[in-house]
Each structure stands twice: as C-alpha cells, then as structure tokens.
Length: 230
Image (cartoon, rainbow, N blue to C red; front, side):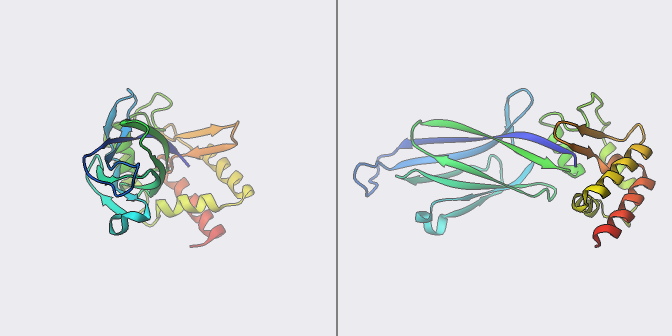
C-alpha cells in the first residue's frame, strides 16, 4: 500500500529549580517536552497531522502518570529528580492510527532533541492533504502533484457500496498467488492517473487505490471479498 514518511522531532528542556527534591544528591528539576514535524526545508512546524499526544510517565507520578494533550505543540511540563524512559503515543488525524514513540528523559543537557521517523500507510485524503503541507507524498514522487481538491474528487467518484479502507485491509490479507493476480489486473487496467510504485529490491508493489478506475476497484473488491470474506 502507498505510504508517506515524516520526521517527528521531540524537544526536551530541563533546569534545576530551587525546591527540595527529598532525595540527597538529586536536585529537583522542571522539565518540559514539545513535539514538532520537520518539513522538507528542515524547519520545525506544528504537528497538525496528529490529533493528540498521550505521555506515559514513570509510575511514581501516580495520578499524573498518563497525560493527554490535544493542542500543538503537545507541551507537557513536570517536576522531578529522576531520569526515566517514557512512551509517547501520537494519534493521527483522520483516524489514521496511533504511533508509539519511546523517549529518554535525561538531564545530560539543558535542551536536547530526538528525531523519529513515522510511516503513514495508505493515508486517507484528509491526512494526505495535511502531509502535503510538510513535504512530498507518494503522489509527488514522479514529479506530478495532484491538483487541489483531486483527492476528494477521487474518493467521491468511487462506488459507495465499496469500503475503500476494508478493501485495503483485504488486499493485505491475500496470499502470494492472489496478490500476483491483483498486480496483473492493476497493470492491465490502470490509466494515466493511476499511481503505482514497484520496489524490485524490497519486493514490494504499492498502488493508490483512489487512483484506480472504478471498474477495477469493483473487480478487486469482489475478488478480495471472495478470498478473505467480510
């Protein structure tokens, strides 16, 4: 399936504060974390592709161990004396799924950055439009940028009786022989608007389902339903 990758930057700042920590040799610190997307010009921009960020802190934070933020830059601020590993779960807009990132909270530097590569598989039109704001997507790799509004038009023209998300899931469940049949059909029936990517080295074939002609979408739907069921 088509996929888009983005670099997510986690920025951590910390400093010692004039308050007792209760633990000898470990001063109390105030720390904060913010989350950004790095665009194609290597600039930090708001992470609007995510709806929320959930921070899962050390159990010693008790009632504050799990904290959710829904406004960029998803800034959390806390106080503590100890370093620990945490999990940050980013929920993608347009019901694009969750991405769990591991983050090392440490006090080696007053400010440090950590970068993670996040992969968005078969993004819906809304998410794809948001991803385009920070860099190229699979529709741009061949030097052809879809016109504004094209994604929505492609989605609308598809048969309403076909669940495109379900179709994508079904295709991923097919066996090797059935997948070869699907690839052959795509090659035989594709149009100039159809986006495909064939990675020979990785042995992967990707296709944007929304760029397929309607009759081929119906063929793939009926075939996949027959093979893997509802």
